[in-house]
Length: 347
Image (cartoon, rainbow, N blue to C red; front, side):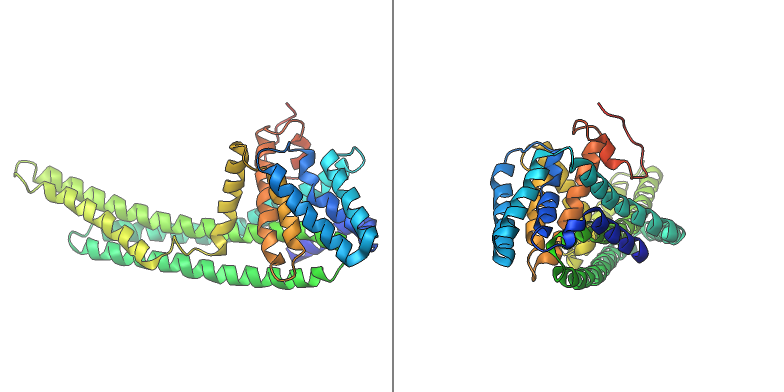
């Protein structure tokens, strides 16, 4: 997997030789920052946040490389905004390859761990079903199970967040010492790789926890139905089944809340959430992924907080890929040519 990252970084730099030239390197950075505007028309808050992002990029270019850096950054960003025929095909190839890294990494990781995940999920379901079938003790078991499941979700997500966050920071500090164009190109495969890792952990943990919860609730419901049928002719007793189901569900939810799992999920749940948020924001005509992409590139220039930009770069790319798949963005179908998914032709 690391070999693929290194290969793509070298490949991206080879596509843009000027990325290695001081001053002109800012043209690559500017072009990448606005590249998604070749496919998205500005909406709503784009007219506010995109100028802020570009202003910060221009100011940083001027501060580091004087007028040459400023002119290069402005010229490069204009290529992205205008969707120039010369730069367009190359930018499409770069972005499509970055999205391919996400899907390839996700598929490989899932394929490697699929048997383990299925086995654990099946065990979790039957453990939950057995716990739900117990009459009075199920309330305590539900509380305990919810608490333990929440602790596991919280603990594992924090663990993955530390590993991926520390790795992003180290890679970002290394890339920050390179010309800005190289950093802009390398950020794409790095961001999508770590996003794929975090998405895998988030989906796996939620799948296992959901299997246990479904098993527990199914067991509680089955026992409640049995009570209702057996004691149907005895007034008041059949209500015990309904009370049992309600208390089991309540105890399970309380256990989750006690662990504060859903409130304190770390990085492993961030990537799926921000990808969905980027889709909703564009569907509501509030902010396009292109503007988020530009803001992320501006944040990438920060030495202290730049590592946080990788999550938002990946979110913008994946939101864009989603819209391309369903043909929301006209004539952008070829953007996802490298993704191993069904491809819809041009509208």
